[in-house]
Image (tube, rainbow, N blue to C red; front, side, top):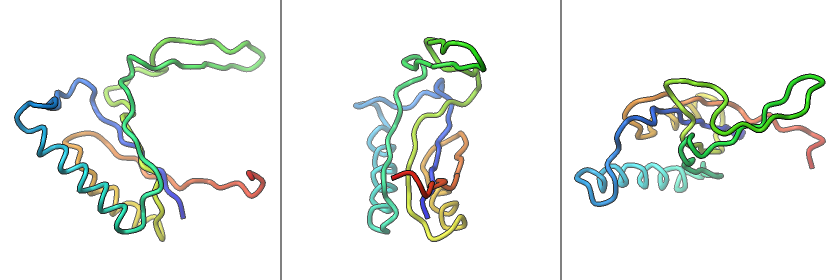
Length: 120
């Protein structure tokens, strides 16, 4: 089965930048995690997202024209910062893989991908 892992974190949390103390250790944790997914045959896709300040939201309502709005739709303490699309035998395995994501604080949502029979 395919699962989407959505990584939510606080954009105000100061992560080390390239060249800062701790940056190499932080990146090593992520590259190690990515390699674990690849080696285990779980990796399908994944990416970090640009900050919400770069977002554009298309807002739709019944019987109304779409509205284009700069920025994210909802104000929250945690923003969607990245994702993984993985293959796992079941939800328990997907949750176990998500538990190892090296974020210091935040939340990780695991959701089965609903494949539609008529979607190509």
